[in-house]
Image 1 (cartoon, rainbow, N blue to C red):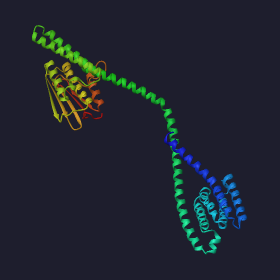
Image 2 (image 1 turned 180 degrees about the vertical axis):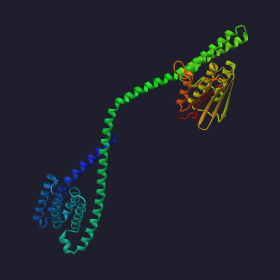
Image 3 (image 1 turned 90 degrees about the vertical axis):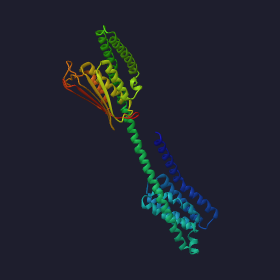
Image 4 (image 1 turned 45 degrees about the vertical axis):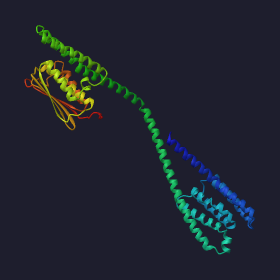
Length: 418
């Protein structure tokens, strides 16, 4: 239950204590008043004791045994007996005090204030010594003044007490509503437990699928490209076996590609950034990839960087680096180009990588025999990478007029949230 349960228990304890006090208070005050009066032995003692006994029976019947019957009539009768007793014996002013909680308990609305005012007038009479003393010493004006002051004070106290009661009722109502909401919430949580378990299963499956796609992209961008490059270099070495210098160069390129592919394969398994990015910023990393590719494929390739080159989020830099590698790999495999131009552009909100070649081009909308779009997994992998970052990949090409690939991603700074 928590705080809500503690508050409800506190309200219940307070109400029980208040109810018990209201039940016994009139009897206690009446007993004290009777005891003090007996010590004084007034002339009207038989009448006072008779009225006290009647008041006790009145309280027992209407206040204790049948508290919900004839409330206004009960209070009027009790007030009349209290007034007579206080007039005859001033110490019954103590018993008159019971009229305040009795008015609040048995009356409602404005009648409460009327009961409090009548109780204040009776208490003022007892305070001045009873009706006999007031008459003997001509204290009528004093009684009126004390009564007026007592009525004002009683009205003010009743007002604030009533406000406190209303606030407590509102708090009880609010707690009841909170309890009802909590019950419904617990029912909803219980009902949704199965759905939550299903969502967890789906999340695991989605995570597995995402990891499979990541591994597929990384294998294609690292191992597949590396093996293709090694194969190209070995084929070139086989064709230049009679030229030792050229042969050694191709063999050295194949060896370097094998080492780089092995390093990238290990980093892919460990889900860390490419080694070339771990050692340099993105422009330098793409520039190094471009120089190595140009030397290995004997094709002129140049990177141009524009804008404010600044560190980007790792996912942004990896996506653009892999796009550059895949685009260059496609040029080597398909374009038969003489020149490739790469442009890395830093803008306030975006980072763009453009790769253009003067090769044979292709028809981007053409379908392969298996039904996939032209370009195969390479273009699809590039597109998935940039789309995961809410980016866009555009491909422009036509037969005989070269190819332009443009990857645009948000400029998420290093350390920024994706």
